[in-house]
Structures are given as C-alpha cells and as structure tokens.
Amino acid sequence: MQQASHKTRSKRQEKWDGYSLPLCIKIIDALWRSRENFHIQTLCVLGHNTRRDSEGNGYPIFNGFLAETSTGRILPASFDRTTRCPEEIVRRIRVSVSYEDPSWDGRLLETYDTRTDQFKIAPCTWTMRQLHIAMTLQHLSDSEILQTCSTSPSAEAPDFLDNIRRCWDYLIHRPDWRETFPMKQPRVFKRTAGGWARCTQGSSINHPARVDYLVN
Image (tube, rainbow, N blue to C red; front, side):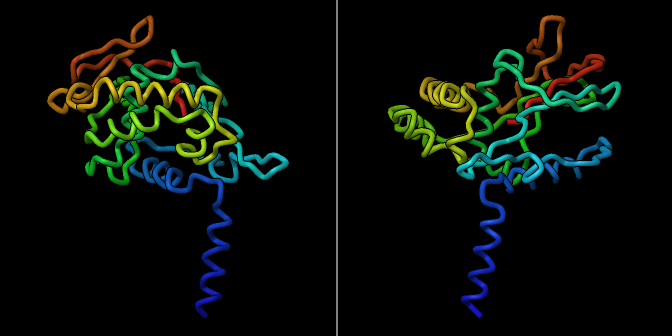
C-alpha cells in the first residue's frame, strides 16, 4: 500500500511539473475575494497557458494582458520596462522578499486599486539576510543564476537576468526595508497625463477608460 501511495504522489507531482500551481492558487483566491465581479469563460493558467518545446520544456503562451475596462475585452500584450508600473524595482523586490514578512503569508501582492485608480505598493519588511543573499548571488555567472533562481531556466524572458541583478543591487545599497517604506507606509501613485506620480495616501482621481496590467 505504501508503494502504491508513493506512485500516486509521484504521478500527481509529474502532472503539475512545470506549472506554477502555488501562484495559480493565490490568483484564484484573490479573484474569489475581490469586491469586483468577474465573468470568466476560460482561465488561462497552468495547462491553458503552457506550450512545450521538443525537449519538453514549458513556456508560457502569453506573459501579460491588457484589459479595456469600458468593454471588458482582454488582449494578450507585452510591456517594456518603462510601462510596467511605477517603481518597478521596488515591486519586484517586494515580491521576492515577502516570504520573510508574516503579514503577507499566503496572500497575493495586489497593487492596483480600481476604485481610486491608484497604484499602491503596500509595505513589506525584510531582514539583513537579504543583503547577504544578494551579495552572494550577485557574483554568480548568468547560467548559475538561471539554475539557482529560476523555476524555468529555459523559459525566462530576455530581461530576467538584468532584472534580478537590479534587485540585488537595490538590496545591497538599501538593505534596511525602512529606507523603502518609512514608518511602514505604502508607496502610492496616481495616474497623470505622462504616466504616474507619487501622491499622499488617501488621495484619489477619476477612473481611466483603460488599464494596463502585467502578469509576471
């Protein structure tokens, strides 16, 4: 019976191999808890958003999408570094170090507030351990970084290495989270004609006709 149970677990692991199941679960949970109502016909996650090459390596069919809030249309899209979000590097760091902050345990790091049309990077704490990790990994070669830091080394975007090195540089120069989130306050931005502008917490502006999202 133990052998049969082991085989069953192995088959289950093989079934989900190459998929980001924990992230998918967080996305589903965030949709379920959201104040907005969603009419979803096909949720493009896991097998619905995966293609494989001749060697069996998994690749996403699309990495991002654009939502037209006036019509509800969803379109595949890609965004360069300048259009992804304000303070992209801070957002990336928050995603990578949030496991040290118990207040974010099991939660999806949401940023865009549809009610106020604000981009809010909620505070996240981390320890000096991140400085030591960054200093150690920064000395690795590109191939070593891919094997060490990526769950899909063969499927990473061209800017993966540059982005992760920029995160480490940030942590090396600003190892104390209080420099990024003074008084543990969020970094809040509002939309302007030229993009996004930093604002004080609680301010709001009118909703836009169209919103761009990035799925990392």
